[in-house]
Length: 243
Length: 243
DNA sequence: CGGGTGTTTGAATAATGTCAAACCGAGTGG
DNA sequence: CCACTCGGTTTGACATTATTCAAACACCCG
Image (cartoon, rainbow over all chains, first blue to last red; front, top):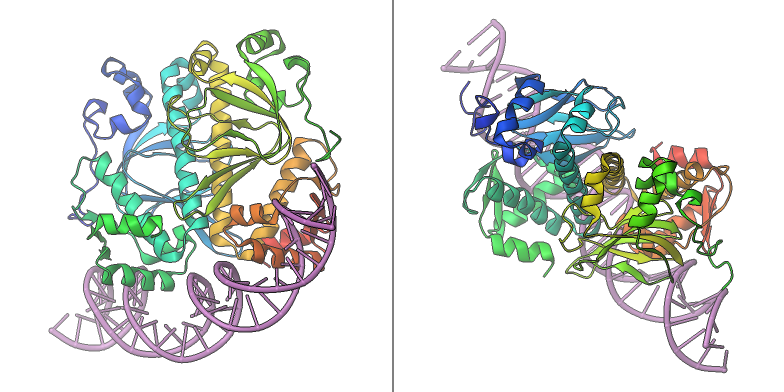
């Protein structure tokens, strides 16, 4: 197997040791309540790169906590064009929709080997009712999703290609840097394809390639073979803000 | 005063007669609980076009139900460019953020005369705690916001100008048609400026003008002097889906 | 009448998409 | 070990789409 994307998918031994506990809904439970989650939880699971958690139109019976690895959320238009909505990293809470039995509006594809913690979907609402703190936490998470979506929309709608790519990479990198507590210069292993970036930003893969070259030549960032290196964060930031 | 945008801002006499009750958080309360809301509510208020409910960076002490009129939610970039995030219509719940005291990430500007129902912000979380059904309803609303945001992102990221405008107008019109129960051909009074459309779609106002001309010449939609007429809904839809 | 805001149009330019071909490295089967 | 395929990257030439700048126009309102 080996460490394809920097790290092998890893399943924690129980919620108590779960590395992403504080990032997701589970943080609403104090340690003494963790057994509630353990009991509710269906299982842990490992999925290979390129497999799907769920596809648009499906009514999966599960909801997921992303434990390790990367997942893209995306939509596909009638025209065949794809829009990447989000690049989800460990700690993301995936597959929740307000109406439990409504078909998913988007698909979720693993872009690396992935480990998830699985919750049953049908009974999830009743879990929320029994533990209001979970509901409040979920509200926070979803509200954050809204803001992140607005951010993404603003990026795609209001910035030119170069700035747009800069901002996008910056976001991913920053999110990583302060969710795990890692120094900002440290290279990040992430299986980002130029086509994925393009689909996220509404830009052709071919054009993304040229933009990345610019950024590389200007010594701002480099993305090669699945590792992202921030060469000049301040410079990138200035570019993204449009100077 | 007169009916500038089709209708004068109107304040209902008590929650019981509120026209938008079912569309917003309030629908979580059955009639017998409405006095809870009446007591919690700060006041009703009328604002003129061009005034702000709040601006980005502020920490307003209030949250709003939009009773009548139209409001744009937007962001402004350092570069001066503006991104319109949403065109809010009656029934929208505006100004909620998970963290009560965090500065607003976006601004909200009335684009017509507007009537709102005002809730105090500081104590809102405790209202949610005392009435879990309100919390659940809010979760639904916010989750819908997420989906709408994804929709908008997909539109801006994955469609060309013409299709993008078509889809945008279609969305607004459909939302209206089934939130009030009005026939789909009926013209809609909405103070949409070409610049606003542009800011929503990431397209220059000048270019929007040309695109609107195309759509008009093709007998698909017309937008003139604040009234939106769907001339050929099916055709529009086909265009938006990219045929 | 005069100013302000929003619309409309043209010409030139810039940004991005499309098509096509070559390349590259990792895996696979002979 | 080689030939081969496959997914992804890279580059060039060219077409399309959208921006920019500038000017004129239309309309409403005081």
